[in-house]
Length: 327
Image (cartoon, rainbow, N blue to C red; front, side, top):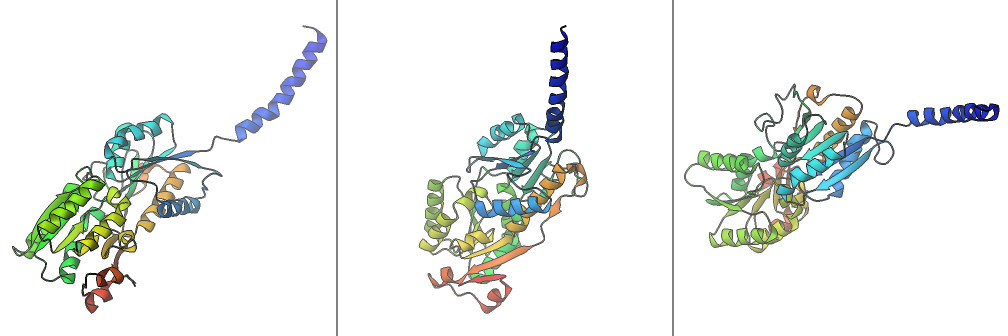
């Protein structure tokens, strides 16, 4: 080798070393895969990002988020989960239980943070609430387990209600749990309450369900927890008012959209916790060691403007129970 080439080679190696060292100091930005059976909803995502920030992660600065929305088409979840696995994301956030099950089937190694509406042990997602084991943890919002309370609130609102409708999405894994809870509560009241179950998984079926309820002269309605129903909350509230059917919904956003009454978990707290847990896992925590969070904050919201339209009388005692009255 000529002396000039040898010196040039040494110089090039020296120049390259700082660049290589700099590259090593700049690890790739971690990516969170966000798998949701519903559609984009900015308020909840803002709270999720707030939880991430509490754990030290800011979207676009030191973490990126890959979104996958099933838009109520639950059969798309397995492929959407597989897409996130192929992208080798650092964490998968899965909402609700159908998305969690799809993520679980897609990977046994990538950490998964879920929000489910019922006991994740019964769903087979974790070994126990205190020590989940495996690659999954998250939040149990209990939304699918509140049917008895919702039915009781309806009966307090309409004491003569004897025929109560129950709307569920047959494509949602929690439909049977909601059905069991509401029918058991109705049985406990006695033979004076009959439950009419109607099912819907698209907008046209929702229209048909309300036509059926009106034809059966339903006195009131319980809407089961479902992300598709959440995305259709304006349609549901409009139809309930049009058919003059007093209705209770699973979360406050329904009442804010014009629904009569809601009783359920605070979604803001759920999504914040999902962000916190995702951040903790990005810092090195193992899902197996993070206990499943049990939601403890439940809200009763009554929309008095909606109540006045068909002339529903909301008793003072029920108003006093409410966490919020929308005027």
